[in-house]
Image 1 (spheres, helix red, strand yellow):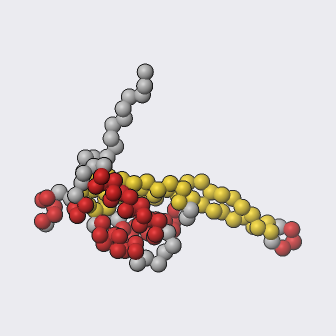
Image 2 (cartoon, rainbow, N blue to C red):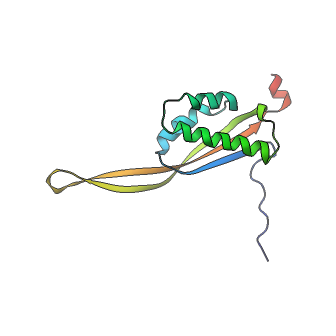
Image 3 (cartoon, rainbow, N blue to C red):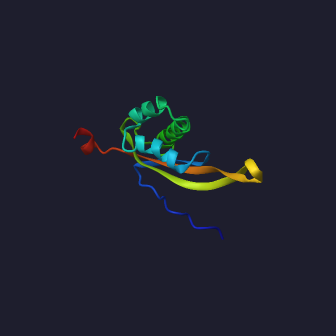
Length: 129
């Protein structure tokens, strides 16, 4: 009387890591995600290491988690991994206010985001090309 097992959403040569409630706007996070889409894991880690954006450290930690998932959970070859997807989504927004002149207020929005990184293992045919 339990739930049926859900099918795996990813292919056999894929692994993913999801970062939830990341404290940055989706627009700013997407700039970092866009810089690593399609790259191999080594150059992507180097790109995030030397990026000047504040959130790059958190994205690097998430990428390292995805690499560890691929190696330990799915037995994929780390040297042939590349970032096939890096998607960013909107989460909740904390709404705060700040007192302004003449008894008025100014709204302050503190947005949160989600990020999903999907790694895929390159095939032998595409590796040589």
